[in-house]
Length: 317
Image (cartoon, rainbow, N blue to C red; front, side):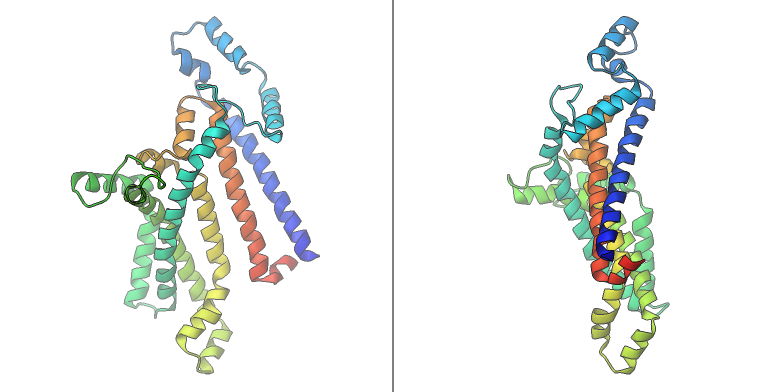
């Protein structure tokens, strides 16, 4: 029963977060200087022409009325149409979603392959050893370098010298798998470096905490092999903070890595939402932020429920 109550409370918290995200993105867009009419007509538009555009698209109505209309449409599966193209925005998001999903998956794979082994190795290493020092340096570097700095450096290097990877010119995986991977490795590495550093540091800290527990000392006293101790005792008990970081990071990735998609011209949902913001295309931006929040909340809700599976005692708290 406690697990059911915990699950219901978690789902209710996720729904409240979604509603809060909808309110915030709707309000924020209304405070941005320059509306759709200004972007469409330019600075020399007459007040009459501006009013006609706003009336045509319902932008002249009070903000609470616009919000309730949008929310009611969302509840019926209507995400609105683009003010620029007149096409349903959800169709464009669904068309671009596989691109962002591929980028996110590659970036997460890079982060896990680099962060987890280095984090465990740094955690079990003796203090002051080369492995421990290397883990600290790599972790600090990963979380300190901004995406746009690393991405710009990679673009410069791989554009100036033929090193086998391609910059720009996205090609779908179904069309040419090899060329697709050559195009996606650089943006995935750019996006995944921060995750690798974050996972490495979290894993190292979690392993260090577990290594001080009495049951680890008891396992050593029983003569268990170091590899067995790490597999059976350390990794399981260090899993919850690492799971939190991995799921949070993956939610961020699936929500749309806007900077990397814009920098490398990856035609995903992040680039689409960025262009929509530049055009003051409210339906695109609102839908993009709401879908990103939905993915983020869903993944974190699943992680909260997974915690109970890992440690059922959490449901009683």
